[in-house]
Length: 183
Picture 1 (cartoon, rainbow, N blue to C red):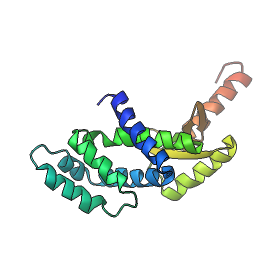
Picture 2 (cartoon, helix red, strand yellow):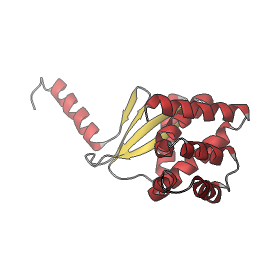
Picture 3 (cartoon, rainbow, N blue to C red):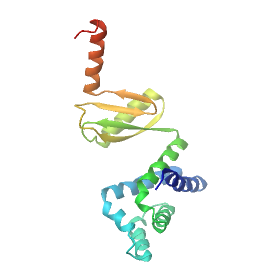
Picture 4 (cartoon, rainbow, N blue to C red):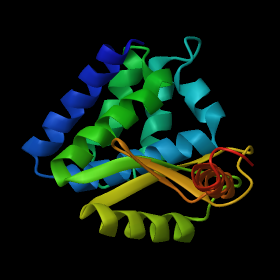
């Protein structure tokens, strides 16, 4: 799927969320669906199957996602299945999340760390960066094993480098400046 197609599906769902005045609720449930697909990739593969009858796939969606508050989300998933685009759900969900965050004034970013961060750690970093930027911030954690420790955060065009490697580089740079370029 090209990015434009994913954006078109995301924009369609976003317009519906605006129309029914449920943008935050749609966003929350789309994140839940994405999390379920990430935790159960076999479910996504099953829903993309060409060999299973459409009726069976629709029943599976109803059973799996019928408990969602917004019935439009399972209907959207069925549309993606019918159009054989369900395998691109992550890309569509990401685009949809971006539209929702723009609507809510939330800045998106990435926090790199040597190991996976807990939700509490991510929330603490989001709060700290949000205070610096005077905005609500939503971060996605990416693991970078090259980092020795600490975190590096990218939000918009800003970088907040709290890694040990970053600190060593800043120290090196300072020493080079004060020592006439000799170490």
